[in-house]
Length: 122
Image 1: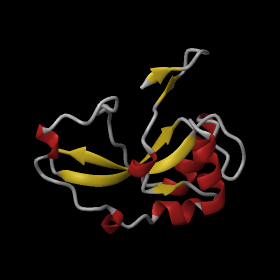
Image 2: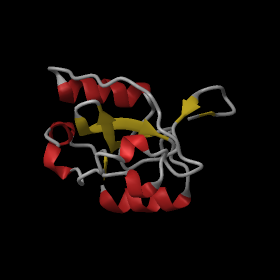
Image 3: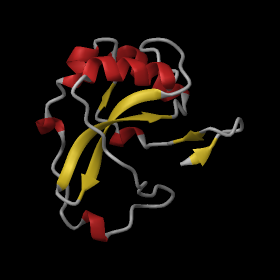
Image 4: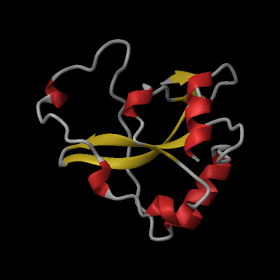
């Protein structure tokens, strides 16, 4: 995590860790199958991630009104699928004490490569 020049935090993520980009179909995004995660090494938590990437502590929230909540979060985070945005919503593998789960996160659109890949997949 880094602070942007305007003072907002942003999360930089290696592209190989992004499981899926967020799209305009919020109902479909809310039906993300948990079996989309690649298997993780159970010992990985004991091994520090390679430099310069580090684990980021956070919280996982679940909502009964998923599509509406995602829409409101997208607006809050300035994420507009298929358009230039301040942040991008993506699925990341999140390690918990009970294993790994796919979770939505807002990350920095940190490279032209991401913008191209993101645009082609939406």
